[in-house]
Length: 398
Image (cartoon, rainbow, N blue to C red; front, side):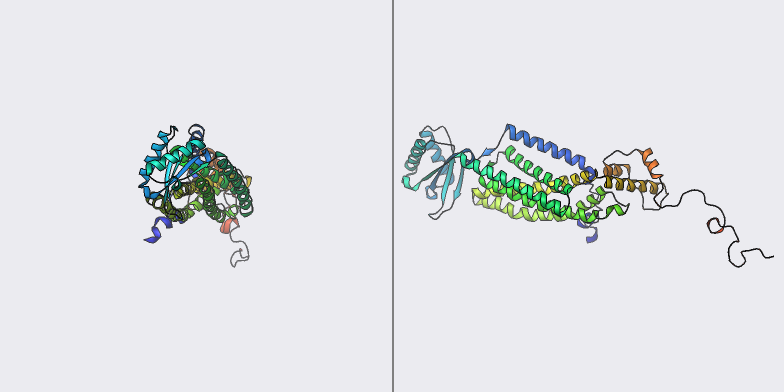
């Protein structure tokens, strides 16, 4: 039946996914991955394109043959001129004059670039005027990097202000921590795998910030809905209400991520893989990796971190204790209810180990406004003297 499907069970909190309660596991995994990424930054570094590292590019008409033929001839010309470098990247590009092949090399001097251009024309049997060469300085890449960092700082500041006004400062901190984790892990994948960093990559990095923020806001909106007025009842701890919100939002976040990844995957695998558009590869790759990581961080990092921060709020701490006290009383049958939570669930709710003896003592405390549990006087109507009052026959006739 549809009512028993995974989506329905997730929304009703019946799927048994204790995501918030296992936050120590997710934080540990995220911490290890972030550490690996930072070590990769320090040891391996990044594979920078010529826009950042500096270099030369040569464009030859596609009529000379295949892309492999053009790369082979350019490498031969580089070897003939004793430059000591080889072609770094190749791609097919279109233009007003027809398709052409762009081949990029590390930095060459002006004399070397002119000699290589003449040698390429001779080897391919075309005029030198049909080959265009460009030199890119690494200073341009430095300017792009500085502006990207400035844009990132402004974006995070605006996000903090918006989330504080829309939700609260704890949600803002959790969301920004999730965004930063997403960026570090995505950059770590780029560093470990050796993907080339180009201006399109920087644009993609800034683009995934908006997607990651959207995913976090969707989950936090549901958390706020579930926890509104939570201290007025003793049925759920804050962590349990937040975990229910994650379960209810999980299918929506998953569907959104899949729908977003499908066109990006088409851009990456069809546009770059089949059509050979190198610029699409740089943009599609960072979007695909970043969106996938954003889905995981919004579920496994943002909301568990929010629950951890809220548990330090004295008002939430007092509420969690009241919930656990009530459950302890229910487990002993002192208060009618549907049952008590296990010690493991209590530990997840309070972030502290639960002592069974302490829980028993806490559960023995009377609920505020409850009638004392002592022995009641015997007699009719809860302790009133039998036969008293104005009831007919209640008094002894004389």
